[in-house]
Image 1 (spheres, protein in one colour):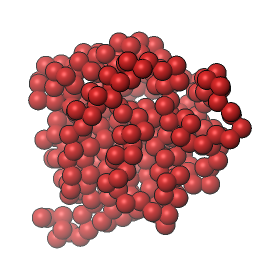
Image 2 (cartoon, protein in one colour):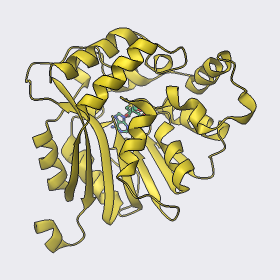
Image 3 (cartoon, protein in one colour):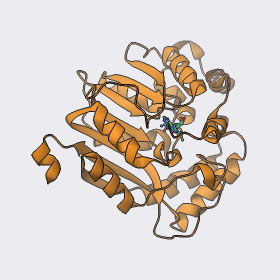
Image 4 (cartoon, helix red, strand yellow):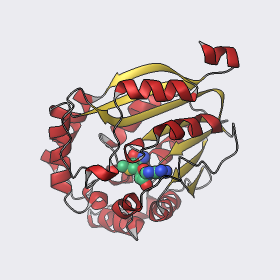
Length: 279
Ligand SMILES: C[S@@+](CC[C@H](N)C(=O)[O-])C[C@H]1O[C@@H](n2cnc3c(N)ncnc32)[C@H](O)[C@@H]1O
């Protein structure tokens, strides 16, 4: 385990599902027939929210016979989107017990509990068997993980040969100056670990992945963050991000504009054989 207690302290928050459902209720929503889309403005804890999740998943061919791992599943927004749209089984792994509990409650509230389970654990010490999953994805999780070599080799270990792995993360940009803090995933540099695109190619390659797609999400990220600032919705990421919300979003915008941060989607595939791995 390599996890800093400051990361747990950053995210831990009791009764998150209740907070989200109470805030949704206050918008006048009929709470008796909730569907996963009703929660999307608040339960997707990453740049671009549901739109970004949809974009990532268009690269990944999940289907009903598969069992897919969500690494750092947070409140379960992406897991519910995947389950609803593909009917595959999803296991969400997250470090924070409060998030696992909230994700499970929100999944019951939207009637998707037969497809998804959430497990508390550290992605750098996967609590799963080798080759257990048919695919995996991870959204805005690796930014809190210093030991990326172990992270990606653990993900590779629990995937079947040939399985797809897709990620959407904030990387270090071309500008080597330090990012401004706080940002949504960290209050200070001590809990933020951003890899460059070159680092990512090395980590993923060494873990046994072949990169298929590198998708620069910088333009999309700026547009969607500025739209969020303008709209400033009551039912939105403010509920989960809480303290210093405006400052965190403004810093993220500045970091991306100045190329100190760079959001990327990367799609890769676990190599199938030993010979394949040597390519
Ligand atoms: C910014 S949130 C993103 C959550 C979710 N993927 C989403 O996009 O809505 C980062 C998540 O990564 C989780 N996380 C951070 N370090 C982790 C680790 N070592 N193992 C598992 N989860 C971790 C946090 O608990 C948090 O839920």
